[in-house]
Image 1 (cartoon, one colour):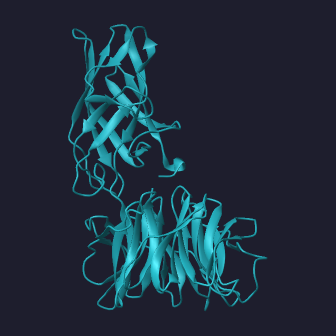
Image 2 (cartoon, rainbow, N blue to C red):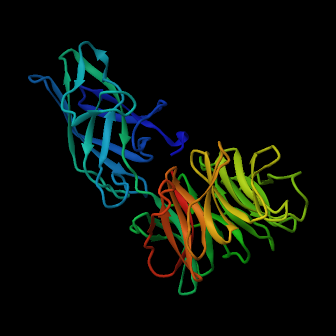
Length: 424
């Protein structure tokens, strides 16, 4: 996840009061782990019970559980493996009251996370949303003169990616979310009008809806709930929403000027403004924005005739990234900003390609008869996209490092398309 989402847990032990409490803390750079995150009560919740101190053995102990507050499953990267969750110590415990020494007495193992030789407790299981782990008994060796100490722990775990998408079932088009293995499928929008083209970040999903008569943008919690209308433009179409990596901004297309142009606004619907003012001619069409970072976008424009991909920093004019006589469309920027997946008919069929920003190299990723489209990054290593078999779409995922291997995401009956990764 982007650095802004990372956090840690700063914990304080009161030996005399037999109490352990944890809150948020900062995370250093240079992390080596599957995913490291936290924020007590935000993404995970660590809870201690049965806290005690045995003066004879000089052991301070607590039973500790981990609760998953994310819609993603923790402890698995594929849905079939069980890597588990490791809560590791960023540094040795530090004495804050009294005198003496403190050390972790019964770590399950030691590893390289943010530095070498860090002890960890291993919860060897998979945790779905809202699930609480089995109890692990944590022990510290505490000198008799110590009455208080602090320690900082992080949570390291693989996270099973989750996708939001729209699906047409029995004539009703709605927004859903699903895990990469096809599990945990949830219908998010529930009206009788069409809701589609979702984007998700930091607990929110934004989508296009027709419940108020024309195409407007709506927001709702990723866990479901009542939608909030973000735009209110009679007989004007809003489309192609894209939430920024930190979840604070929304890029989208509006045809308020007669043809579609890129606009941005705050995630609460305030501060709407055109982002490409002064670029191209009034009749050129702009579509499908995607974020490089919280202030830089990629999008498609017909400025040169065919569809071409441009990049721009907000407040500056765009520059061409990928162009030519073919139609290069639907850019999707990788989380690290180093690559752009897109679709093109440059070789005849509509396939997915990869543009590397540093080298300008273009690589073809899909190669089959039929249309592959709507790419989205689940991580820097995984792409999800829509495969059209005839006119029937379904979702698949692949690793660009091995482009010949793809995997179907079983989403149930109906036509599934327009996937977007759930960022946290």
